[in-house]
Length: 268
Image (cartoon, rainbow, N blue to C red; front, side, top):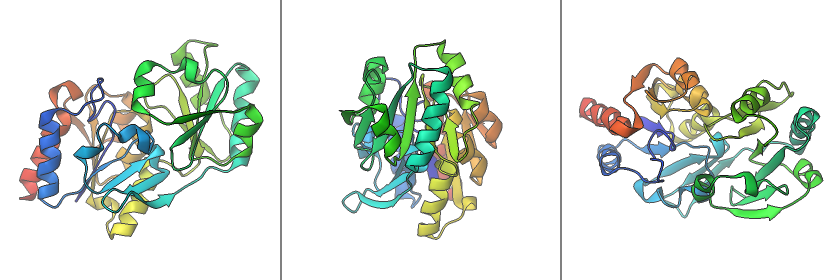
């Protein structure tokens, strides 16, 4: 068995911490030989405050990148979105949202190449959760480089409307998702948390039937639908609930821990 878990809203609380009960549940699983793999939209730098809870693997950037934590952060795989797809997506967004701001995630997630006002529009909680070097660039630079993922935000419309509008855009080769923050993330079609986990499982000699996944956001839907068994948090987005096989108690009730404790007991 392998337990794949989203972070924000599933395991990690709003103050960027993991509860003692959830930490204990992770330890119990790993002591029972069940790896617990953070599977997140964050970049690797955004795991700094919680990385000590995990001992082996991490899948980040919405499935585009994976690390072996036990062997000097060795990169297991890296799936890039081609510059041509980035350009097509940016041009499509700008047709209706000319003031949209973009961030291109590069260099194994350690650098955000950002347009002029992108960082200004980030909330303090986002800055804490995804520490990285911010490199100011122009739009042509954004469109001229491959990336792990592209993020877009704007102040031109209500945030819920913006997210719905941008998720509905049809750009060949592009896959969009939202993790609950007031932005939309884009990567190449076929690059999502499910694809990242599938690639990791292949390297470990496992299949999707071996995976139990937990998540709460729209960017978890593919992973929840793909895993042999999956839990959406009771307070999560409806898209996640629709994709999961089961519903877990909410984050505030240590729903992650309740599920993992039960799984460890059943595996004993």
